[in-house]
Length: 378
Ligand code: HEC
Ligand code: HEC
Image (tube, rainbow, N blue to C red; front, side, top):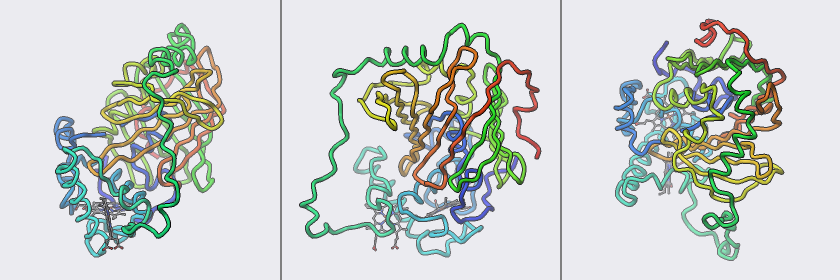
């Protein structure tokens, strides 16, 4: 497996196997989770390389886990409404030739210092706080804009008011996921379908799972089989840039995805879950639940009528802010006593990273060779 050296195109490329961080991939096809109050402490405890070890020219993001660099770069793209090449010389990310990169370094330092000094080290100020999707932020109030009413605040349900309790929501979710007896009989699963990227290109996808915790998502692309997986010991991600072994947070998330009994274990996975209010996902009324999972903030939306999970939004925390990744689950179908979403949509701030997976076929208790859970050779 190669180390995290970037050599691909610096342009914001379309498609999920080119520019998306591995964590996004993980989220794209199954379920995800993620954040870090103290990047330094976490990377030490996980034995993961820090950014300055994996990259050539890191000056301000020292001590941050190497696997967070891509997430932070995506976050800066989204916050400023730019592509990688606004700051970087294509294919030579370590170079400091562009003025924007040098400015961005000062800005990163300013964000880190401000949060440290004014917010007790909590990441409250981010690039997006000021930039709002523009390179040059608006600094002067626009004449007349004070007359425009501000957007209404999000509907905040008072704690518990007219809302079901968290236990009730989780119980209903589990009941909707399938009959506990049926879960016990399933040892493996193969799901086949098509994944479509933001440009409308579709590729065949196969998701293999085996109890208790093996998984592989394999996408057949013109240049070979790409994907991600966990073989019970190690996690991997393969894209057009090459093969990467997952470490740190990405590994934790992959392991969660691979948990064959994840639907039954959701209560254990969610730390400090709270029912935060009513919402809608598409045309479905839903209850929103906030929690933390693997140290990251996560919001789950459960169908108010069926109890099914409709949406999971994970905020991938970095020292300069959080990158949200949303996965929607639609068209649940019962197969062998369990209910599975046949349509899974992934979206983040960058519309080019969106994918939709439609499954056409689900088979249980297929015998799967161990080797299939490791990265494909071609
Ligand atoms: C707003 C400016 C900005 C944008 C946009 C941006 N970067 Fe960066 N990038 C930086 C800065 C600044 C650093 C150096 C950070 C430091 O010194 O700690 C950096 C460092 C990197 C590095 C480490 C290079 C090395 O070897 O030292 C990589 C890789 C990278 N960026 C990739 C990307 C990718 C991929 C994108 C698009 C998804 C992107 N960047 C978008 C500003 C940016
Ligand atoms: C407190 C508000 C604030 C925050 C937070 C902030 N910026 Fe800025 N940024 C500005 C302002 C204001 C300017 C314009 C300065 C000027 O015009 O000289 C600017 C300019 C820039 C520019 C140069 C744009 C140009 O064309 O002149 C870059 C690049 C940039 N910011 C990146 C970032 C990044 C990356 C982050 C997050 C790590 C960030 N900024 C966070 C306020 C902020």
